[in-house]
Length: 433
Image (cartoon, rainbow, N blue to C red; front, side):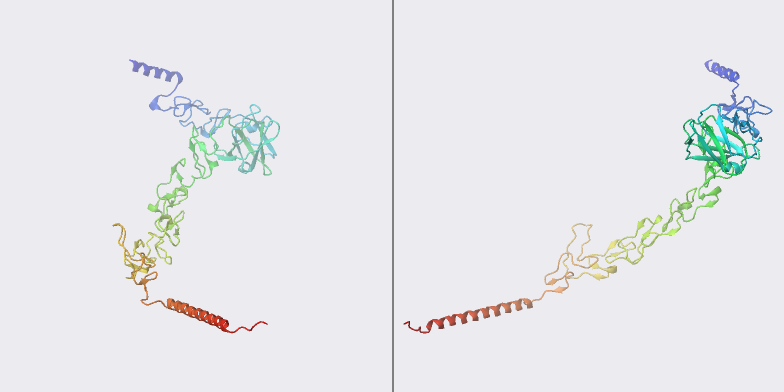
């Protein structure tokens, strides 16, 4: 019973407010509403003024007075007391006479600027400059000026939106000026709400515009020309499929990319095949680098004269002295050293057993052949290749001879002095008178 009562209540409310209940979506043929929840009021005019399409679009942009846009959902607050034809909602009533400037006001002054829509000759629209005037007559600077071209019915004239996010305070008027000799303007509109900022669309401005030129993005997201590079679809919301990129996704990712995968916009490779580098994997690795995107350095044990393989880093069989193997990662065995481990350690080097099973017992250094633990008795030198002499060293003999000679000279001198003194004491002295 309770469930039946709820159903009856929903049906009654639907009838009262004329809201559709068929299949959970808004039925515009039964109401002047549209949108997923029938939240928007149809403001089109025509032979059936109370009806509009399910998406709210009005044919030929025929909107009720005071509204504009493809769905007639923007309320116009633009006014021009001196020349009403600029705000008469008719793009066919244009001023083709020579003008220096056009002033646009709002229903009340001062007013908060949102964005401005202007229709007219294309050259005129492209040449327009805009000043925002303060209540004191000063000009408000705009550093973030945006133009956006839109489609406006079937008129032979063009339409552009003008926006400036810098304008945050109330202003007195907007001044349009053309940089060409004769400007042709038809109509101006100014929304009472911010609506979607430039580059976004959707009922809640939730979709980013991806047209090749952002100012060509329409209220429904469609583009006047084409999508941005890397995107496709009716409203350019789909990324290029795998292995494609660029405008209309016509470009194929380079085969030098790993699995031929690249960025959908610019074609830069996600990763490179071994031996290649650069955004598009267009460069061979520089000497002594290797691998994907050339991020690895050749082993220091590879020969410094021959670069390693640029794909996998193998040393091409040319190693520094003391090493062997494809990647020069194997030291010479315990009794060898030098280039290609072709030399044998001196048998005069002392041998020391390894302290653990992982250590390799060896006699000499694998690169230079220098004995690591000293020499056998009777040998000396870095490689223990010099024999120690069995006799007295020549230097010692020479030193001993010099000492002996010096001692003899000293002894002879002492003897001579002593004899001279004795002779002097034996001579008779003359008597003193």
